[in-house]
Amino acid sequence: MGTFLIFRQRMGTFLIFRRKIRNVPILLVAVFTLAPLVPVALWSISGEWRFPELWPQAWSLRGFRHLLESATFVGALTDSLWIAAAVAVTSIAVALPAGMAIGGRHFRMKGLVLLIVLLPILVPPLAATLGIHEVFIRLGLADTATGVFLVHLIPAVPYATLILAAAFAGRSGDAESAARTLGAGPIQTFVHVTLPQAAPAIAVAALLAFLISWSQYILTVVIGGGSVITVAVLLFSAATGDDPVIIAALGVVFALPPFVALLITLRLIAARASGISRADTARWTPA
Amino acid sequence: MSRAGNRMLRAGGGLRAALLLAPALAVIVLLFGGGLVDALLQSLGWLPAAGLRGLSLDAYRNLLGDPGFLHALLLTVYVASTATAIATVLSVAIALRLRSSRSRWLLPVLQIPLTMPYLLAAAAVALLLAQSGLVARIAGALGFIDEPRDFPPLINDPWAVGIIFTYVWKEVPFVTLIVLASLRSVTDELEQAARTLGATPRQVLMHVTLPRIVPAVLIAAFLVFAFTFGAFEVPLLLGETWPQTLPVLAWNEYRSIDLADRPAAMAIAIVIALITGLLAAALLRLSKRWGKWGHS
Image 1: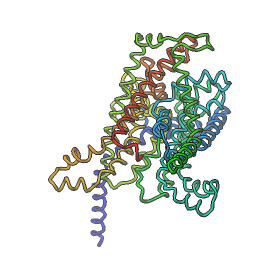
Image 2 (image 1 turned 90 degrees about the vertical axis):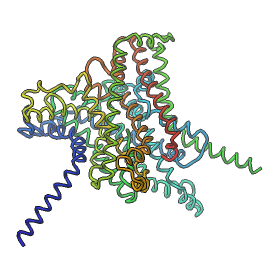
Image 3 (image 1 turned 120 degrees about the vertical axis):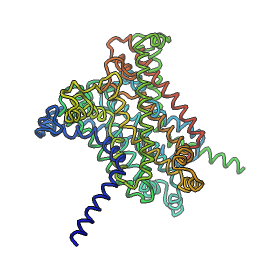
């Protein structure tokens, strides 16, 4: 009996080992995917990490403490969050009707409309931002958070529109017709039928718009001058310096919202339908 | 009568669609389109605020004779095409592998780089690949090198290894997800039929599977190339001081105190927009031919 158990254990390890060998390419991809994040995580909480050592000699929260005690960082964090939240709300406000029109209606020149929506995604917004800076100076929008919020809309609105258009393209509109037949007004129908059904897509679009704003560096620097400081701006200037602990601590803060958003999105998609494969998330994520 | 009624209905529908579209289109046309036109005017030497009122192609003519610009163009094309090629090949291999594998845990992991900002990716890759970075430490632990300076420079290096690595890291998940989605359109029956007819696994791959995913792969590669061509943060952080990529060059010209450099900066920015715009046009044309756009 004992020998049999040992035999089964050995067989078990052997089988696991074989499965692992077959999974070597997949493991390599996972290592490659996670590799750049490892030094960020380690450096952010390391107290001392001399050169040839693979593992920090001492741990410390110096980086995070430094950030929390810095008024510049707290201000940057607040500004980043406010600007990103405003971009998310505004993007949804303008992208929701546009997405309903593109996804749910037939009209002439839809191709042209799609092209206009796609252009800021396909053509990098650097030229437009450099160009509009001069207008913003004249309007008093340069070096202000409002100006930064406005240019962040350039990449955010198209993505939000495409996501919502895709969501409305997949819907028949039967539920709305039923509601109208039963006597609901257009506003009632929108609030009680359309909005709840489109809620997951709206959530994903809002998250994405938030993240696009949160991730911006160059648009912020062009329009914000040196006056609007976001977390991205702080991370960039830290990254040109030589304190890896600060770079990494800022990096962790900068990576946190996208990471949380990813978890939320995966949850949403998993909850939405078990029939839809995870690969469908390709449609919901930007380049 | 009924035809007129129909037309009225359609006109009403069109009006309603126009109203729904107006806010989003206004944002895009005013901010993006307006900015682009403004950049174009400034590249032609029209900047009344600075007393520039000329309209000429001088800035573009000067660019063509400027070795800094030509080097930047070459470097940008090199970085974008290398990153695109590596990311595309890797992604197709990963997607094919993932399809036949039962392990589902890699997909969520693979989506982590997708959501990470480019700036974070660049900073992280610097901590990974620098001469005192994690990879150099592993090389040290294995006894290959004694000191950081023994490690080959992979950051701010002439071959732009750090930049390309960062782009590959960011883009592989994106392309892999697109390829995986398109692989689902390749039905098992088709592949099984080929196998029953005596095709080897290699033949099935080359003649059945791959041809069907070519459109999706090309679209993804186009998107990656256009993006890396115009992207800014990664080369600014991980690039050499000379040559610079086009977006970095445009930004540095723009920051120059001398307003006379303004048309040059705008001309470079317009060149970037023009090249990516032409690529986008080619992409849209191709995707229309494949009929992919209709149901996406």
